[in-house]
Length: 315
Image (cartoon, rainbow, N blue to C red; front, side, top):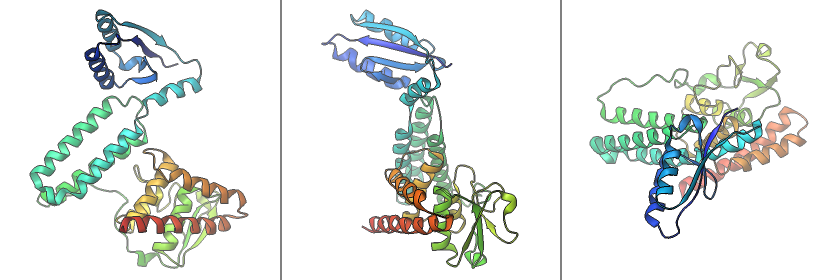
């Protein structure tokens, strides 16, 4: 079982200089806060740093003690790992990246490059203390790559773009009045993808629900299963792949829905409205008597979400 180093401390009440210096040092190491005065680091990520802080605190007249923390169960380990969740930090970084991307043209080449370098340093600094990297770090890296790609499009004299592999633009006219197949008992990504198809890609679409990929009808368009024409690509879920493939990803309301779907499907950066969407979909899933009935209700819910996001983006 994974082990952690723990620093227990109590500082002299009047030594504000020591408090500030210690706070900065603990922040730089990426310590998790178990409670006030108790700080934790994965043992593998602490080559003596906490022991040095213990010595410094004792020298300044404070109390400090380092100890080993060994969770005994998987549940305990999961609780300790939560202390190092960097999702909110990555979310703030992604917001900065998005702001910079929107301002690249007015910034110009030189200032744009400076802004990108700052964001790269921020990403590197955060990655150093992200001891249990997950989906949020992948999303932030993808956003940073997209920013650099946009910079090259504007200022790099026509150099080739990165290959998107499977995300080429598709003419929606080739996908009209089609049968679309996905796995039965659909959940968030499949429901949202079906809604996107019906509302924005193929308004006459018909859906079939299959138990396994081999059951996909010969002329049907498959989505969200292994081997399907539209499914997860790199860090994008099927909804995001469909939106990008059909040129719909510039719609801010669809992007907002896509962020919620991404979070609910594969995790990553928290999205404020995601849990509300999940609760509503879970409620209709419990009452729906068929997959078609489930989709019909989900369509209404997603229509409302889209309308709200579209109104917000215009205000």
